[in-house]
Image 1 (spheres, one colour):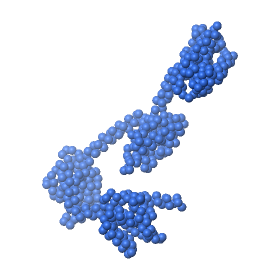
Image 2 (cartoon, helix red, strand yellow):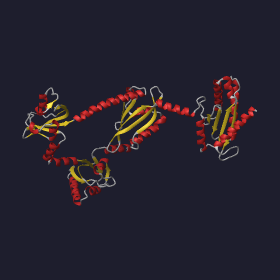
Image 3 (cartoon, rainbow, N blue to C red):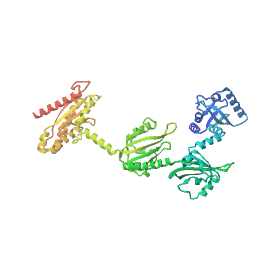
Image 4 (tube, helix red, strand yellow):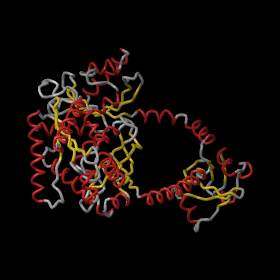
Length: 539
């Protein structure tokens, strides 16, 4: 029931007429939104009939008269009266009040703003002056004809459009006074229709001093005491707009050609009607035919990658609310084959209503998939060793800097150096040496965690950063790497066994047992220990 009441209130609030319900004590029980818009008064300002009289009639005498009229209408069942009231802005408006008694004793007021009608009536009193001014100063060319289509009068604009003087064309047949570029097929039929009070409106081309002028012509006739029938002809020169229209058409055709050639998708979103028009390129970019896609927002929402949707919607919302100059987002859309494609999406609100709400937003889709994949590839290559796919020295050094200010302590670092790689390269070739390097990389990678940083920092040098790893655990990992290499030597067909010297150290800001303070010193210490192992192995 409460839901039904709320729906009814929402409906009443959308009505174009004001609605007020009052009880017998004059207390306002309901006021719809239209009343507030019409008068400017808030609910807090108008709670009772007495409040209304004080606001609408600040002058005591006017207030007294209004109350008297209302009381008289209620007592005599007069249900309709027009009042002149004062709005919150301090100006005057004319409202038509219609009263009706409800079953439970309440009074229903239906209120219509008729200020414009009153204003029209007042203007009509001076219609002769108004018409004269309108006729003389109109931005349209106007001529007055009698029932024989002979010219009675012409205004200044008509003289300007056709480059003639009204004194030269007075009493002439209208179609002799001006030159048509092409004559209608049935002029007599058109004239008779106008005389029978049918409006005639069309676009007509005229020849004016060897130039073509495009005009909108509106002709209608009215009864007239002096001339029996008076015919009005209003001519609007649209030559400039026609030329602009032609230029715009050419520009649009060039733009469409450019868009098609550049493979840019276009979308046009009517926010109020909740539909989106996509062009063929938009659909083709994703492997679809345009007929396969519905013209609504769900088409885009259903295609966008789940990981990108939240950010994209936030960017759209920010622009719709006017927080950004334009909407810009890069996200992935699912193409017809099921793969994902990177799209750069750019849009802008082109129309807002009087309250600033977006009505229309237009945008483009640009395929940046190859660009994105190339960027990912470049970023990968800049951080990884091409031979082993491990991180490279540059990335390793950046991680040392980053972890020095982190909370990942204790941090252990392992440094390794392959034994006899130069001899292997000299005796068996560099391709065999590369094979040894790859085997070491695989052994180290498989012995540590996914979050550990394994890098090839030189030709035969490797390093591992172990966040949140103490000295004892690091020692276990070193043993694990060495055992893995020993196992590989049993199964790999290598000319000589693969061996590596490993050294490690731990840094812990809280506990200096078996550790050093600085992470760079930690790396240097691990490097020293590695060389001690390498030297001991040679001896």
